[in-house]
Length: 424
Ligand code: S3P
Image 1 (cartoon, rainbow, N blue to C red):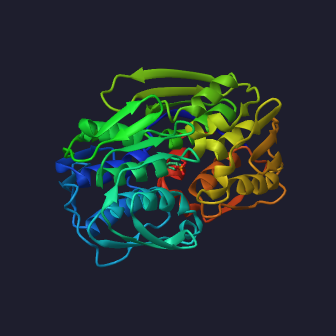
Image 2 (spheres, rainbow, N blue to C red):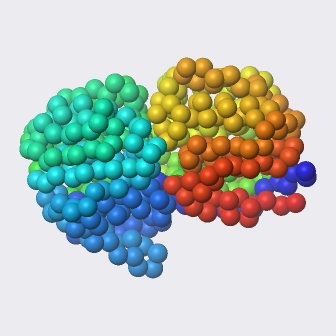
Image 3 (cartoon, helix red, strand yellow):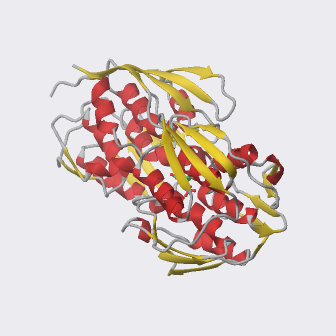
């Protein structure tokens, strides 16, 4: 099989985390929120649909989304279940927001989401006075709105979803809430609250103070391109020989740029051209294929690259030496058990990989992957499917990825965009 290289420029779709939050904060604000570059993927559409069911109208004009905010107390009970589909972010953030409303909500999800732990939001929200019932900590979940009170809470694991659930609940609670994290996770909720209602939030050291009682005002939000989607092209550009590509307007929020640090640690040929912005920082990134040194990723690095572990494992498979990832047990409770999924599927590609309880050890090689089993499994996990798609570019024979369509959870046009960059 001849291996084409990647050439040219691409703009990947909008950031998933910021898109979810633009709907959520837009819905509970007073006035309209205009959202540019909203990600129309299955996960974000699940959030959008939930708010429509709760009485929020959302229009689309010239590719821009207009959320007609109803204010913090303007949501109404949905007569039907809220279907969160595959989206952990929708579920956990909405659990927080709905905990303090004066109505009851029922949340359901697909098979993968129904296996993911909800105890991590149920525990702090219950401490705030919420009434959430789930079956052994899993969906389906009923949120019976209750009057809430502020708490001081230190998160046991760094999780932006849990932090954001508490932050949203705190807006409807009585008294101040203080949140502390063991390590900094993505801060899009804090930034957005600061934009919509600066009086409601103060950050001091590693503490976040939420002060309820101030209204949120509709805003103009520009969603940056998702660095977690750009990651697949950064890695493809770095490992497919002869490649040189530019990825435009990528979100460079420092709580998300772990992959950039790893590429730098590996000696990758990466150029960062920063773009001046008022909201989330952005840059054009140019990557060129070349030799790569192995990397070491430990627990403290994980939050800033948590969604990039699958594609970073592929990057490691092309490095000159042994790379290690540790402190990544959280990967076992994502859309699939990602550590097991990567180890199992990479072995089918002939990659030398060892699975550890909290990580992976990968021995790199620059030879084509010698496929031992060409039937690859995505586990219905968008990031596993996209990782395998990039890996297939370096395989010594064609492979088949089962259930590829799950890529639509975060990147509906991934295959089309990848093919557009490929040059024979
Ligand atoms: C997200 C937070 C992260 C991340 C997920 C999106 C968010 O999850 O993996 O894809 O938008 O808050 P955790 O909070 O579980 O780490």
